[in-house]
Amino acid sequence: MRRALQVGLFIIMLLTFGLYINDTFGNTIATALSIMTTLAVITLAIIIFMENRHPSSTVAWILVLALVPVVGFIFYMLFGQNYRKRRRYARKAQQDRQAYAFIDNESLLRREQILGSFTDDQRQLLRLTSRLSKSPISFSSDTRILNNGEETFAALLAELGRAVHHIHMEYYIYRDDDIGRKIKYILMEKARQGVEVRFMVDAVGSMQLPKSFLNDLRRAGVEVAAFGAVKFPLFSNRVNYRNHRKIVVIDGDVGFIGGLNVGDEYLSRSKTYGFWRDTHMIVRGEAVQTLQIIFLQDWAHTTAANLYGPEYLLPRPVEATAGAVQIIASGPDQDFKTMKNVFFSMLTSAKKSIWIATPYFIPDEDIFTALRVAALAGIDVKLLFPAKPDKWLPFLASHSYFPGLMETGVQIYEYEKGFLHSKLIIVDGEIATIGTANMDMRSFHLNFEVNAILMRTDSVAALVEDFERDLQYTTPIEEEEFAHKKMITRFLESAARLFSPLL
Image (cartoon, one colour):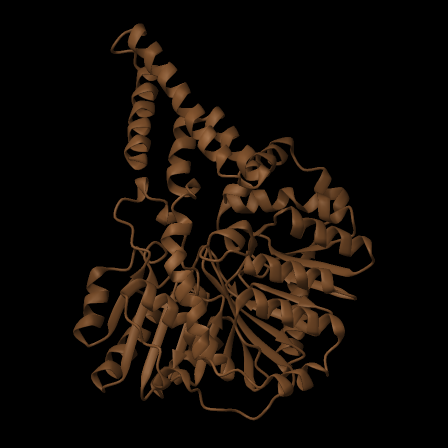
């Protein structure tokens, strides 16, 4: 009933818009429909108001509806509806919680003994991430940082070639190009050899993937699924909640996680983007179990197939390693904003430094304030950001936040060598997170994301070294020069910021 009402309101608004352009039916009908449009906007505004969103989000939506009613209505239909989200994902949330019961956590005594080697702040952070994500902390996992596409895809192709039992693959964007087909042919060959191959992509992120590509996989014996299929994008808010995860698990022993999708542009072969700077990671040992659980949760939600069994959840052990590794998932199915709260806790735990690399910087008020306060307290806060955009609206909105950061001492650097797509936070040179989540509201509130928390591991030291190397290809933004931008640029940045709660 409610969907029918919304569709009806939308049709009325379209008719009214047309009548304003061409008064075909006379002024009386145009005036009547104008009144109905106004009532429709008021009705939607009341619905948004009653949903008890964050005040900034509520104001942004009402402002858009008031200024550009037809465009605002379309945006609301695509991105704004929250009323069905909890019901749609309630079952998935319950299944997600139950899935972690399959993980055999370490004994409490041993766990506390190992945690005793960390500082009080580090122990508090690990306990928080465990409570938020329900996922275990591993002290017996090996990780290695993979820089950019060449290193990442070389490692991925090699590990795929060694698969003997199963391959589980999940990507937001997967392209039918050179690297996409190379991986496809390996998957098909492995399936013919009897290896269980499951291939899942996001239905919107990979909507350009041809049906023939997927049919080739199916004919070879690969199981294929599309997360969050959308039949009528204009009238469905499913388009808003996307699976942004990039996960590969091979034989339950090896996992991949990070910022790279599958496409030639991620190998720096795009004339538009040029060199593509990104960060990925290979994982072995206990933490792969959690990565596997996250994939199986998404697979079960999409296909209703329950695959929780020992053949998938018993990774090959590795020797106990220094530091801790934890894989955490977040999404609109969770009561708490896991990724946002983990990021916030990391930022507020910093004693010496906070280093951030992100292609999109659209923080909410909590994250923005945490960075400002940290800089005012004398903590070394550095933000690495691309000099050129891949999407103009988030790029402009991001720049609107920079003056408020720089006035407190935050140092912002523009990456000049190519497009920066790395997504990481490093705190005090000892704690880091790497994964799919950007420093923006979409990753905090709307997308399904997956990140790794690393504490005092060799991979953290590698990320520190990489960050310092990346700084060599940057230009610092000077506060005084930034303040003297052209008026039109500042206006566009301010206008884009109004959409920040919607991006």
